[in-house]
Amino acid sequence: MSTTAENREIAATILRQQLTVDLHSHLGLWEAKGMNRGSFANEIAGYPGDEKLKQNIFDHLSVGLKSCFLGLPVDLPLIQFGAPGNKTRDFLADEAWQEYQRQMALLREMLKTLPLEVAIHAGDVAPIAERGRLALFLSVEGGYMAENDLGRLAELKQDGHTKFAPAHYLPSAFCDNQTDPPRWGGLSGLGREMVREVSRLGMLLDVAHASFAATVAMAELAGAPLVLSHTMMRSSDTDEHLRFISRDHARVISDTGGVIGTWVVAPPYAYGTIAEYTESVLRLADWVGTEHVGWATDQIDAGLPDWFRRSTALPDVGAALLAGGFTPADLAGFFGGNLLRLHRVVVGDRVAN
Image 1 (cartoon, one colour):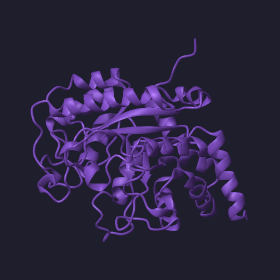
Image 2: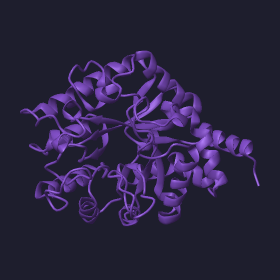
Image 3: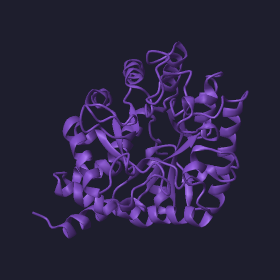
């Protein structure tokens, strides 16, 4: 049996040598930069500053992380937990599209000065990593900007987005979410059109934040593997964490051939120790299979437990999973291989010249 130190070195080697991906990241609430209004991000922590953002990126690179899905939550200015519908007010006319444009402009400025580069295909990750940069796959979180114009989905694709998550914390015209009373019985008529268009465009459909009924409906319509980028399977039938999923919910994703990103979140919501987190990962993997499991930080600097304040803890996570029964091949899939395989299936890959 390998020692903890040996397992940690195996995990560290996989991170250095394999293609790896964080299924859902905000890189330290980058999107909150310059915001003055009360918001989800500002209530929790606010933008941590340019130097801390740089530190988060260099932590990722130093540990061997090659890529992440960068979330753009366009309802950010409106979110307030505890308010009706978790919102301070409704969107103004075209405000969601304007917020999307603000975040994209901010991202373009970041790309000029930071070791970041947008990836479109899984095959882009290795050459970007060779240039010493972190590859960013783009993903809107909450598709509110497209509710009045599904043609904007094609504009997102043109902007480099390869994953689309229709739901977030505000109620959606597409589907019910996990944290509000149901409105559509799962998926609305417009939501059905959205799923067909996302499939036609060859984008990954991310069902994070979507209700169980909405997830079932999207799985039936999509005809492609689904991603659930950041969640955890409930520990029991009495576990009431609204953002966690049941065993049946998890099986819906795996039955499509999809991947579930296991969410590193802080107490009281989830895992106070690395052992608690890895036990939950192992329980999910036992249920759906290791090939359907990945990982996601979500918000470094806001909401992560003390043992995972920096991504440099990833080798320790890997060591604990190896000790719990993962093989090195399982761990390589968990750290990124599973999701990148899915990306190649749905989005396609570059054709060599």
